[in-house]
Length: 463
Image 1 (tube, rainbow, N blue to C red):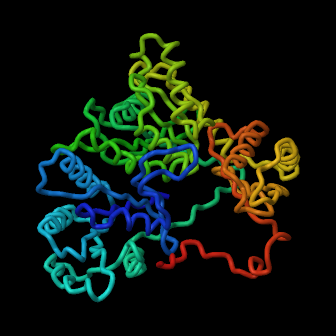
Image 2: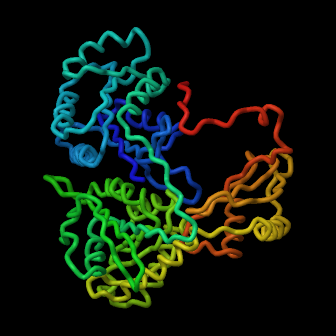
């Protein structure tokens, strides 16, 4: 499934990050909240009324500013408008309609994308006096809201839900049939993604250029290797336009998200000369959070001089900066010379198989009983957290539910301990696994037993 991208754009200080966090239901616009990974975050997966989408926060748009920082932010916002499928244009209801808003609106009309016009910081009748002024934008529908306090938020999200496409169910393949795996080639601009695919299929299927951002849209190619078929998705980079430069590379994550959505395995290409960058961390994080199989590919290996020393340094870098995907294999190759090129398919086949692995419950719990008796979990408010049993509930990625007496007392470190032991026992090579704690039915309160399950995608209550 290819989820649409929704970008929030507007001038500085109109409340874009507050709205971003309100939609997600948590404060995510400042730092990543996944233990072991700290990085700037301006994108996340979101859902409303069962419709799933990627949400992107952007910097403030200052059309007239010559300040170098604002010029970079302006370029980033322009790029976000290009890459997004839908746009929320946020303005400040307390300041009224400003010339900068009019310029943003003009750019949005030129982009010809579906736009929702929202007026933020409207906290009651005292702020409604300036609202009629915004109709000078020439639009029929304006949505007043307070991203901070929640008033009007549901109206905004209902308007977004009207224009978002339905999220189609993912069909289950028939047992015993081989589904052609989809392989997304992701990475920063100019790390060799298109060259990699061209080298594999033996023709210039992709446009290759040393200029960052040549590839505009995801392109699928069917590839056969020793009788097996694969669909290769070149996701790539960002188109250069005007002053848009490598300084806006962070929006290559938007391209990566679109390709990762519908893939089984992500090949994350890194540049051998540069090692792991902050942008690489972000892109690998997307594949990890989406539950996809991951292979770390160090491309342009032919340009490395002291290969043994360089490989050792690179592996140390991966262990430090990409420790949250320590399950992912690392390969070195050269798309230019075709060195070790096809080795990736052996890894892909392993990972596709591991992502579909189901472990019998009895065998799973024999391992689980040993690991919990060997290392007792930490206390929770002076009470012992008891781990009763575990069961596998899904594949792609392998997903497990651990039944305990106090789910809220389960510490991340102990989940990580369980994960490490499950990997030692059963593999799951190259694939993330998910482990969720759940209260055992016997331990549930009467209220919990009678409470209906929360509807997926139910509207969040504004607070």
